[in-house]
Length: 147
Ligand SMILES: [Zn+2]
Image (cartoon, rainbow, N blue to C red; front, side, top):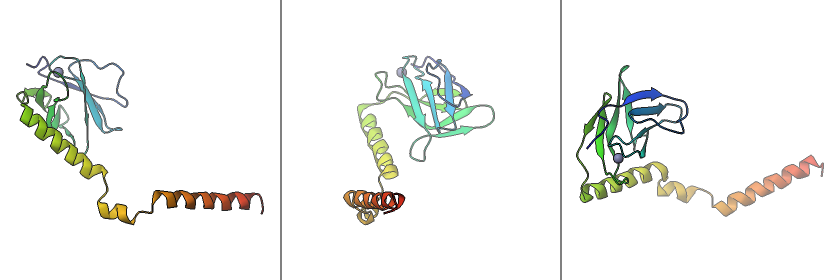
């Protein structure tokens, strides 16, 4: 059951310490939005904007979020879609859907943040990099002291 059927949007620079229910706070600077779960449980839901995460659209009047907001990590397990400011119940999650969602989320994030293996193979080993840095620093300090 959703307590809030509508979310007003508020563009902010920084997220306020205390969120008010029924408001979607949007920070373009940090490419993220936060709101209190629409079921009324009071949990904060953060939806970062990224190709593998959420996409926000603003039609000049109301805000939509895609894909749905699935709070499977919260006790309430609420699941809804924000479409032009309206909160549409998307049905609660079954255990199988939660498992699939977590898997999809994890895979999308892994693709985003882990460079492909071949890039890693060509990168200098960390130990090497630090020796190089140290020797450059040693050369620099030697130059500074005129030796
Ligand atoms: Zn909730």
